[in-house]
Length: 340
Ligand SMILES: [Zn+2]
Image 1 (cartoon, rainbow, N blue to C red):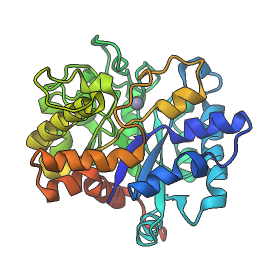
Image 2 (cartoon, rainbow, N blue to C red):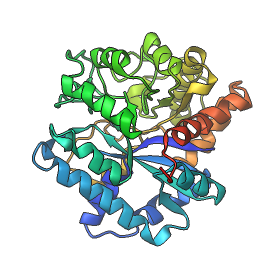
Image 3 (cartoon, rainbow, N blue to C red):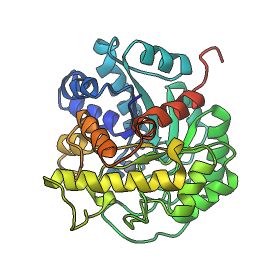
Image 4 (cartoon, helix red, strand yellow):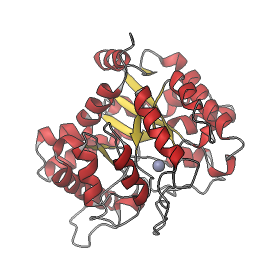
């Protein structure tokens, strides 16, 4: 299985279709998904700060609609999966499945009843917040910053966790600050994930996870997705024997992978590469969080990353779980059976 647990696909498709482009996924992404035999992509629904609060709901609904419309002509190759059966069918038929997830509950404003509306639109996961404060929680800083921001989950945030668990949506802790992480641990009853965060020990950044947080995600049955943003991976080591600047960065990503596996165990690490070049190019007026800093040029390069993990001595079984098996297992278990 090959899985990327965090990709701003819907946001990019929305922007490009607004500008008149069509068949965005088919032309820009499908060839790369095919190249690496990608089974599952989690598309985040991400609303930029300047749209909030007034346009948050409209923008989130627009992204969901734009992505579904864009995929209509290529349903035989890539489709939204909102049930366990749909995910299994896609995997058996060699299609790429797309799972929808909210990157922050900002589109809800402070009306938790809207969560059900997003569930009915096929959204199956959410982070409480992006790197900002909203009615539910306070986010940590952006990838390019280094500062601890206080304030954890609000009462509404705790209610949101309970409601998500009741609906069968997974909680994503990437972007939550340290207090929020601790608050979530105190109230969550089901496993949760960190879809796109690296290890603090390898590179200290408030977007990355400390050892106790890594252990908490793994101990509860969740999965941590490696982030291929160079700002979160951190500078590569000077003694590196890498042949190119990209290889140096890939080596650094491998260090995070190896460290996370050592702390979380091989069944609890995956990929959430957060490749941002496409969205950043589609919206040049936004100074984007990751400033176009992708270590992988596209999903086809997941092959290169896997090869490097193996060359550095990772066991085949561990690499297979990391490149997709672990997240596939988590999402399959989390998705509702369609008869429900
Ligand atoms: Zn993010």
